[in-house]
Image (cartoon, rainbow, N blue to C red; front, side, top):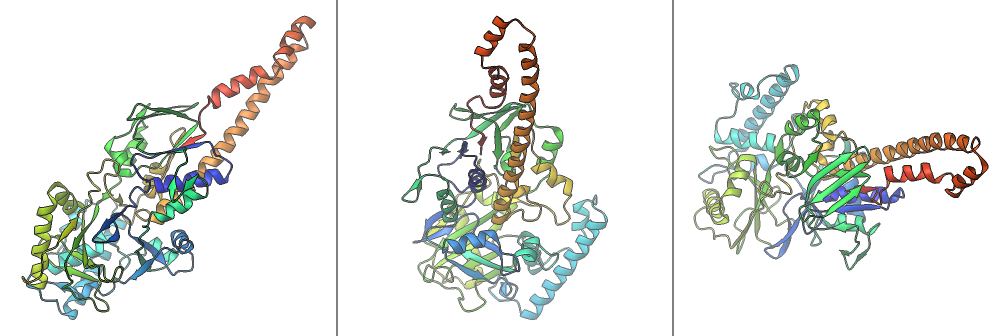
Length: 484
């Protein structure tokens, strides 16, 4: 997620470290922040919301959005549970929906308490409890609770710290506009395009060779870059996929932590229609389809609040269903989605005129949408995932224990990791100054005990050249200070 890389590079520049390179595997910056034109408007394929607004502390991403006049609209999920359709198109009565929802919340809380008291308990045993969801409405509500947010089950840091409101980004410039505004502060840009040679696109990193003296970065096109340090901001999915090899290999504690982190795949499928046929009044932005298969085209949203008259619906799928539709054609997905919509709204509704299906799981530069830590996460797991290995520093939303999975988690992790790197660079400078002093003193003592002619020979080396040459070869080698 080069958005994290941009954040890190900006902080380095603000601290006087300009000798950096930003290597981006794709042909654009943004990573999992990605816009696309669809149905005449700009839609966000990845991150789409600014979550955590209105609290006592300001959300840094919301502050960036306000500073850039990024257009957004409030999303209210609270009434989605009262817009649950069955397979015949009937909306479940509000009393039944409320009871089912409360039952699911109580069951989830009970399950969490068991996990808290028995952290080693097999998750499959928890799933087999008598209160496990079975009916279509129970499965639909379980999907909403667990695959979206569990704020009603357990406090979530984002909402506790920053507020409970969420805003959908609805700006023709895209969510990525915030990244370009950040980049403008330290990279050369013109006409909204980054022209600075320190940003290199289409550079797929394949190997990191690291030692006590520096890091050698090899890319797929055969390029080799030398650096004193590397900040690695690839996703946890990419780390698990072994797209990048390490020489020497990462230590076992690191690889085990990486492999033990779950990955969420979150897919928003966009459908364009000739006209709208769904309810668009107050409290109708989100609606739910109850199916006997959990997560089967369950969570729907219309885009009329964001873009009035756009006639676009979005359905969100996750994990197994996401991977399943990624493996099939868009036409097959369209047929399935239309069948679900006709179950809800009748057979007379028009066919969709276009469909857009992102493929985050099969994108080798992403391999999923975001990290998915359990609420009662093992703190050592997160510490090990974000801990540096020698001169390689790891960052990204997956290194943020409090805000993993969120854009502000990625942003804050970039600041946190870069702060750690700056501290390490300061310590290294101090160590080298001490080492240089240690090397100079014996040399100066030596010049006082040898014949005058030989003293002159040493003098011609300007005395300090010997230890300084040792210092330069070990630390600089003509390499940039950091690669991101």
